[in-house]
Amino acid sequence: MSADRGNFGSKLGVILATAGSAVGLGNVWRFPFMTGQNGGAAFIILYFGCILLLGIPGMVSEFIIGRHAQANAYRAYGKMGGKLWRGVGLLGIFTSTIILGFYAVVAGWCLQYLFASVGGQLTGDTEYVSQYFQTFSSDPLKPCLWGVIFVLITHLIVVRGVRHGIERASKILMPLLLVLLVVIVVASCLLPGAIEGVRFLLLPDFSKVTHSVLLEALGQAFFSLSLGTACLCTYASYFSRHTNLLRSATQIALLDTVIAILAGLMIFPAAFSVGVNPDSGPSLIFITLPNVFQQAFATMPTVGYVISILFYALLVFAALTSTISMHEIGTAFFHEELKMKRQSAAWILTIVCSVICVFCSLSVGAVDSLRLFGMPLMDFCDFLTAQVMLPAGALLTSLMVGWVVSRNVVRDEFTNHGIVSESLFPVWRFGVRYVVPLCILLIFLHQFGVI
Image (cartoon, rainbow, N blue to C red):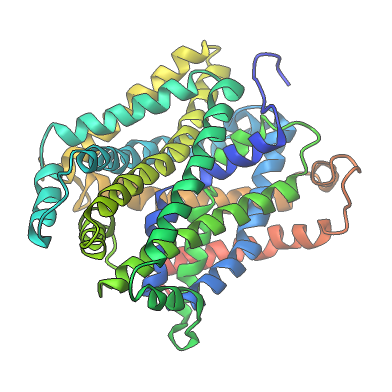
């Protein structure tokens, strides 16, 4: 490994930083409403099965590429598979850059709502809260400003390097995230009628399970773990040679799943307590939940005020752990391939992502003409990355590791050159060669309406 690349300083740092890259708004917002739409606990059971089938094998594949190459994603894929495979690493870098650009828009909304909560601005009837979001999101300046501020906060962490920036921030943000989740979960579960929400989340209703629900669970597992963004590959390039890749992937997947379930325990009991069905999609965070908290804690307004602040602080922390990882992917590429100082490389990413953020923000409110293929620019970026680029990157990664890279090289990385037992290696390799590509192909076909 190059002396100036840096690396994670502890096993805890590896787990928290890499789990932080996976844990984000998808866990706190998307997972609960997907669960609400698809049968509650039955969906969770299917999701966990998909984590085992697709998530962990896919994570280990990216870990092997990154740690073996000890380089940014572009160079790592080329070193492992040959020059043509560099394109897969480049695809991951492009994907993560676009995602960071439009993800920062929503992260900026969370930041605004955190400040609005502190100022007591999110109190009023349902119509007021709904109008508050519409007014804010259509403003030509404020959402852009908050989004760029979020990118700059991310920049300030990434520019400090792997150990002093990313790892240190992860060791602060991830425990805070867990503490905030537990506090809100306890408050939510103590509400009158909350037990119905807990029951919905934990008691499966298999009558709602269809082929579509299975594919939705497969897709959620795929996106939740950041497969296909080159993030896992980039972070693995900072792993030590002693890191047990399979164990780390399993621990990260379990932590990611626990946080998603805790998010369900935070939202469902409160929603059921006031008779709201929490499957309302994108409006859940910014319209439905402020009203839920307000109604649920109507007799204890101070508690409701504090819970609202803690909730949006939780969203900000969750978003930040993800944006850090996405920023690092491109920063590492420019730093190593263009021989730039880390600070300069980080600024390139910050500027590019800020521009994407501004245009995406304007497209969903102030400037209706910012469209591609009939969609607002932000929706198009979401569609392009989630339904095309991410699955393509993950599919090509599994094919490269399963069929192109030497079996001996893959086995050596999997077993840490014989230190770790290879008893599970044949099972894992079968999954990477056959199960993972088939799962991703099913996701592709489902997303485009073929099945």
